[in-house]
Image 1 (tube, one colour):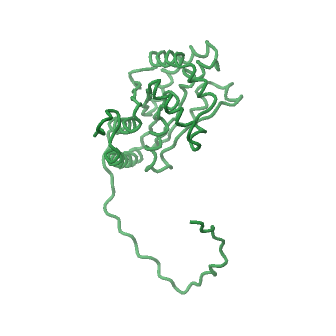
Image 2 (image 1 turned 30 degrees about the vertical axis):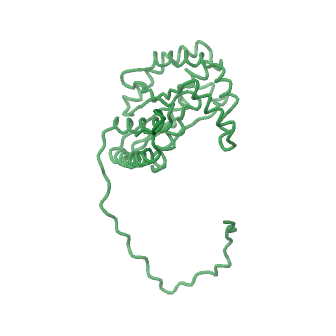
Image 3 (image 1 turned 180 degrees about the vertical axis):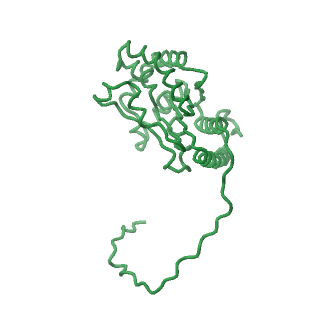
Length: 265
């Protein structure tokens, strides 16, 4: 349902109702993944402010964090820089029954590292030789690998950057690296097109999410994710709470012995 007068904006009530419905289905999917011992990796890539974090937040909001993890690695250490490139990502891969969401991933080498000059041309070319084989190896090991690229227009990214500057609760999201990346829009476009050309493999194709509308992007991405992995509804039967244990005369310590948080509200 689209709001009148704005072809790109969803009605808020419709969005919230549909998001809740999809989140209930995500809970069912998670239970199925645990039951069947599946191993799921979902990669989220895209330009800064494309809405990756918002989608990840809505996916994980109602899920059990014990079997659904978000991986968002920082700048590699000197030791990690000396390792096999994919080595720092391998420990974060899922065990049976787990789903791991990568908020940026090994594709840093094809994007920020290439554009900002953090890797050599030889390392960059080696990534394209190695990455498809690495991902095929993961798939052969039983991992379900899903890759999303969030596409946002120049004008919309600028609007979101301006909004972050004005909002003190979001200003931390705008790093010097983000600003530098903004000034290199064309270079990032070239890097993205090159990346998709070399790594859009049959076993793990790139799925592009149109992200100028955050609400649409969230619903479309979650809906697509639910369609990728066939699952069954394992919702348990109606649960009845057991009766509370009968107090057999235990005397609790005085409440004044406890230190409470001041009630300012």
